[in-house]
Every structure is written in C-alpha cells, then in structure tokens.
Length: 469
Image (cartoon, rainbow, N blue to C red):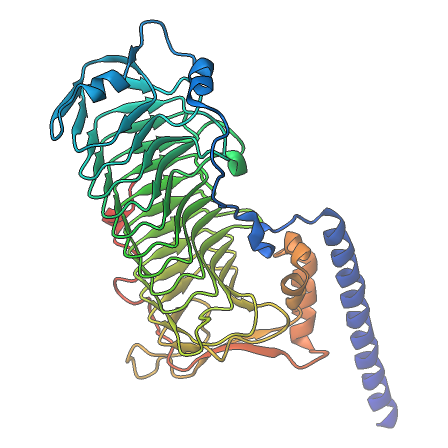
C-alpha cells in the first residue's frame, strides 16, 4: 500500500514538474521572440495626436500668387465674388476657376455640375469670414500641402453658414473651422492628398466653434475629423473610412456622435479630456493594427455609449483613467460588442463605468486589465456573454449563476504587449490548458456579472439600416 502511494505521488510530482518546465520554457521563448519582433503600439503615447495651431504664413500674397499653377483658361474666382452684391447669388457655370477666393459678406455660391475651383497647389482655396454664407455643389481641388499654414479647401471663420453637396479632392485639409459657430456641413465628399496617414490633413477640423452640424458626409483617406475646445456640435450620419481617427474629441464637451459608420480607420472614436458626450447608434468596425480601437477614452467622463455596433476591431473599447471626474460616470448600454480581439480593455484598475444589457459575442477575450489587476470595481449588470457556462432552469432569461471571468496563464499576452503577436497560438493555448489543470498560483477575478442574460438583448447594436455601405 505504501509503495503504491509513493508511486502515485512520484507520478504526480513528475507530471507537475514537467508541466512547470513546459510553461517556463514556452513562456520565456514567447517573451523573447515577442520583444524582438513585436510591433509598437501608438496608443501608448498620446502625443502622436498632433493638432497644434499653425503659425501665420510667412509668405506674402504676391509670393503665394506667383507659386500657383492653374490649368489653361482658368477664370479668376475673386473678381466674380467681388461683383456679387451682398445677399446675392453667384452661380458658377461649368469650367475651371482659379483660387484663392475670399468671401467677406453674406452671399450664396451655387455651382452647376462641372464647376471646379482649383487651388493651384498653394495655400487654401476659399476663405469665408462673413456670416450667413452658403456654398453648394462646388468641386474644390489642389490646395497647398503645408501643415503649418493649414492649407484647406474651405477655411471657415463665419457663423450660420451652409456648405452642402461639395466635392473636395486633393486638398490637405477639407473644412477648417476657427471660432465659427452654428454652421451646417452636409453631404460633402472629402479626400485628402495621397500621403501617408499621419501626413494627411484633417477632413474637418473644428476649433473653438460651437453648435455646428456635421452630417451625412463621405470622408475617405484623410487624417482625422477632430473637434478641439468646442461644444454642442453634432456629428451624425457620416461615413468615414480608411483614415486615422474617425472622430477625435479633445477638450471638447457636450458633443454628440450619432449614427455614423466608421470603417477601417486606425481608431473609430476617441475622447481625450472630453466630457458629457453622447455616442449613439454608430457602426464602428475594422479598426485594426497595434493601435486599433473602436471607441477609446482618456480621462473622459459622463459619456453615454448606447446602441452602437462595435465589431471586428483590435480592441472594441479602450479605457484609460476614465471617468476622470471622481463623481463622474460612463455608461455603456445596449451595444453589440462582437468579434473583437478584446471587447473591453482597461489601461488600469479604474472604476466608475457601468455596462448593462450589452451583447458580448465572439470576442477573443471579453475584458482585460493591464498590470494583473481587475475590472470588478466597475458595474457589470445584465449583459449577454457568449462564453457563459451556466443554466437558466427557471427560464426567466437570466442565468442562474453569475458570469465570472478569471485570468490564468493567458495573462502573458496581456502583461507583455509584444506577446500579443502569439495570442491564440498553440504555445499560449498549451500554457493556459496546463494552468487550468493545475494552477501554480491563484487566478485573478477580472469581472463578475451577477445577472447575465441567457440570450442577446433584442435591439442591441446600431440598427442595420444605418450601417451604410
């Protein structure tokens, strides 16, 4: 009997030592390879979001004019603007018009199909300093390419303007608003110059401007749609793709982002020091790469994130020190967060966020927290988790036992960012399997949802009709 027990314990000890050896060897190998071949994550350094204000252009108007190059036969735009009476209408017939143009009094500029204003490759194309100006149906192309002077298709300094159905091509910046309130920017098509992502200009830059409506625009291959120090702006129904930030709010409070389609951008929506924001009914998808984020927060509070469809991103939601206000909150309700690498990634052990009636489906990992910490100080109540292993014996739609997520050996790719290259690889799966069979240390509880839903909540995610193409 004693010999049998000794043999059994010897076998168990041998198995345990072998498993430990495999874990250590594979873990060290993964970490070394990842540190050598890993990729740099831009979101580790917020300073890469450079939106500093430009200095004045040191070049004179005469120098700028001498550098512009226009197609043969182009008609100068400014004399036509000067000849239009205050409150009048300037109709541009098909043809090419030479920039720049400056509108300093109320008027409407209406373009027929085929009317193009060419910037000549230098400076901005049209500058609007008056209130109640409308520009529609115009194609603007070939601005300058200098960031320090914010070369744009339309530089807007007036209020109560309307800018609809315009096409912006090969312009560094699209619309640049500075202390320009309550304008409408609707149904425009905007592309930047063919430059690397970080060197492009912003599709729409809003600086110290309130109450603007940015609606139903098609934006492709620009840098950002950025709102700085500005409130009560509405960004709705836009289709933004293949850019850096779909929508980027910095020190901007009380804005709304509704029913947009963000596709294949580096980041869908990012809030930096931005409070009282509404993010409702958006589709945010395919934000991939080392910096890929669907919706990101940095020190932002009192945000409502409701009925969004956040799927196929590297990280669905990224939280960094948010909410920053000790009495603030961030609420996530009725969102579909699906097929992301990580559904919700916390940069640190923070609190003040509430997740209720969301559907977590098909994510590689539901929730992660950097630094071997937990997210259980946040509120998780009544969400659907597709990896829930409990039952609903009374068929009330709520699981009989809480949903819990624990960290095992799979912490390796969370704590060593470069090891994410090996996420879901057989090596890490083997480590995790061995750890679950016989844990070498006590696992960490990441989250607990006391009332998990047994089926996805009806209506979670953005309505399908709002997804665009």
